[in-house]
Image (tube, rainbow, N blue to C red; front, side, top):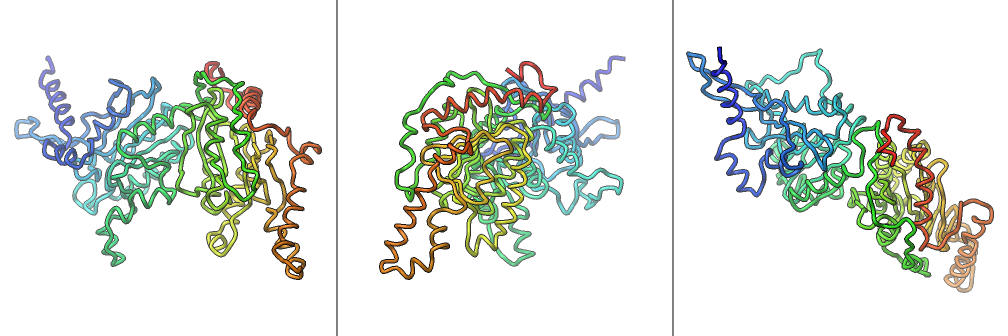
Length: 515
């Protein structure tokens, strides 16, 4: 027996699967300026590296003689591949079939996605465009109930998040379960023509009697500031680039150390321009990103979640080729104060750095927690308290560079346990910023003065002089007081000394990981 009939049917199913939803459906996808899921996978992965899992999963129909007459492929494409030569798992909805709402085979493959990444302990990438469940159910008969003994759908997602880097992209309308998967990631990116929704316009209008478009509900203008995504980019290829870059800083799983990259940026490089970045006038702002680019490896700063809690910058970067997590107050946004969103952002980022063995470097210009009615209504102090306990219990190496203010309770957000602390000549330390502290402690004296404004200014100047960093250095409250231009070389020396601490945290890493 040659098995020719069966072999021919395999090829027939494979060809049908590659056609996805058919020529017309693919043309409609292209007409919207969007790629199909197979084109997306090809655009993301190294050339010719994709190996599909379950390529002929689907539903077939046969004639009376048992011949295959029709085949509907699973509308979820899943497989393994490589990014920069490193293994990964990638999957996503096929929007050309049923708008990405899962058919029976597509649902089974989507559920298996996280299991596959955890089994092989490699990064997981999801490329989303789909509407999640349908009232008709995956079978089309309105029956989509899980048996009582079935494993919780989010258990495998949670396991993946604890085990491997997870990156997701919204590349069109994403709602329901795909939206839940999108946010269950360490890095989520969306394109300018995509939307992320809990429920779409029809559902919102029926339930809430409000008529809103998909863009108004969940477009990029909404989610740049909501914290739902970590980046908004122009198109799909920019999303692929962002994912590839994100993963380049990370190990394949939590039992390995991040890969060290070759760099031509000398660890001894000094940047004398940094000596004049901080203005003499304490009330003037400056661009902290110039400092980051001046200290860290050139071209290595990869900022995340920029529009959410914008008074705090979170970024991945490299220092002498070693991946690090970066925190920095942005004094151009609410003076760099920590509001509730900035606290939540810090907590999530520090937990991420801890999980994947990324040393943390914090560039400090902290005036304190945000105050006022809105801050109280937002629960800032609770969000701040949760962030503080996260920082206090980190075990990765931590360095802090005090550029200007380090004030109040919120300042503790910038110093991990046993942090290496450097201060610049512009650094100020205290329980409160001078302006607020003087207003609070000398309210009556200022009001009683012949010239209240002159008295206020006199007191502020007097107490500002007391917040000099030199007493801190004299009492060994900081490790050193340095010129800003030498920051890079000092941090590179600290990081080299800290590498054995990472080895202790990750004993199963290979020698190549430790180089």
